[in-house]
Image 1: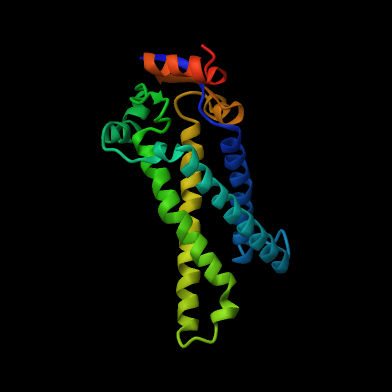
Image 2 (image 1 turned 90 degrees about the vertical axis):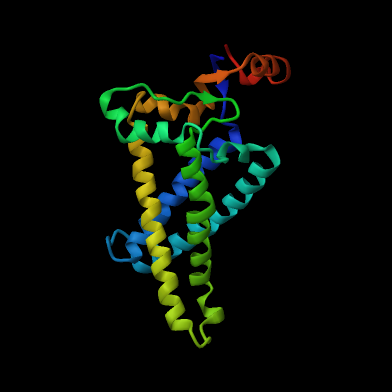
Length: 219
């Protein structure tokens, strides 16, 4: 296997990523405002910002799910224990000792095992939880006459807020890891241009890209 400069992030994937970033930060900003952590906008303005950003993000997620399923990119999130503990050890210990990252990005495995597991949990657990509780909260007027409505709403609000804090913690860790290893710019650049300079390819993958998708490989 050898390293090549390969387009690993499509135009839609980059659009989805950065739009999601804007919407999630809008949700965190407005959510903290609704809870009274800041008063940069009035309460009604915060609520409307939260609802509009939430609905927009749900629509984006629907398109992203469809794109992942139809393009086969869901394969990048398949968890594996192969190399998982080595990568976990690197982030827990080796990174502070100046060791090299033990994982090389590959054509059909652009996420290391720990990333794949984390992103899978984010997409299958945290996002659905924030999505469902948010919709339940938004539609409270339709089911507020139920016998357990008050208790249910309290639990929905608690779970929604708890998951929001977990997602905020995930974002902080994600941004922190972008500052490790290579420079911050080097980590972010592939999500801007689509190309990664260090993708490990087999001879068969090189031949396939050069023959069938020449625009995806540069050297």
